[in-house]
Image (tube, rainbow, N blue to C red):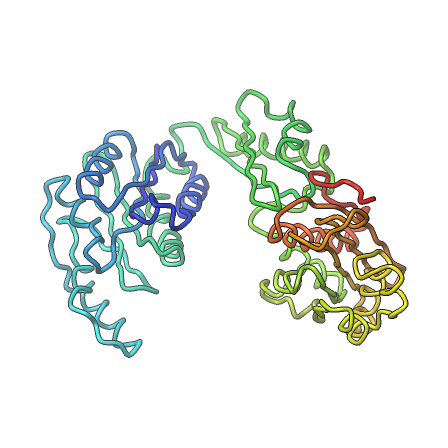
Length: 429
């Protein structure tokens, strides 16, 4: 089966929002052995939309449409799709009743224009939206199946998993016999740049039935090996083999597989090993603690964090000796070590990690340039510290610093050497 992803909205073409729906939809389709051959974005313009619908019907077996199902004048998906294929718009009474009930449940009066969300092309199958006012629908035309979903990501994601993918899985050609079977994996790496990854793996999946894709999502890089074979068993075997080669080649640079993020992995490792963590932050300003506490269940291993930005806060909250601050300055190995030990002791944690640096754009010197960061990890067996210079803008400097600190915790819990990112690493003077 060939798929096309079609996203609709002026805001996408103007660059006002990032179109993340395409990536999500394509990735989910791949799980059913359905490859996305085309991705298209189109304005809220009836002529442009008609052209996109007709093109998609002529070249794809399944078309996933995101956007244009709202109640406003520029939400035209149902109307234009119906007209493009000679269908009438008809009112679905059950859908209208559901929309009315939604507004009653939240104590709001329904505006008259919300009723247009219950109009569908004749012959369409209505797809319920359990968390919004815009139902989706399926329309089969000219050998193609159009699945129209809201543009709001959380609504689209849930409806895709509950309403669309189960139906696609039952269609001939999806996750079944009759053609090549695809199996894919997602390997997550941290600490090495995309070009260096490609160089390290230049002889891996270079040709044949296994391909290797690269994607940067700062500050990590993701590898996507895809295997094609006549049977699912053969595809899985090819995929497992290439994943093993990649892991052996890269070692601890591969931190995980699938959807688990580095913060989620750290939280899981803390829980599984019965260890606790506390963080002391200066230049990252609480970002490290936020990354950890964004993970459900973080309280099982995370004791807390202290953001000590000023020197007085470092002395009073983390017990950093004033003598160290005066002699070495706040951005120094000595102070980073004292911060890590201080937060570990203050919060009663097994591990303490600290970050202090100069995120810029000002504040640097010849001795301590903008981008310099000192990290330290403290544990029952002792401590470790190192320093790096990340020549990045303020936001990405803080992100990379926080991720490096998390990676140190991961490596410490797994018994790996504590190193920093190779991509942007150069020693400070």
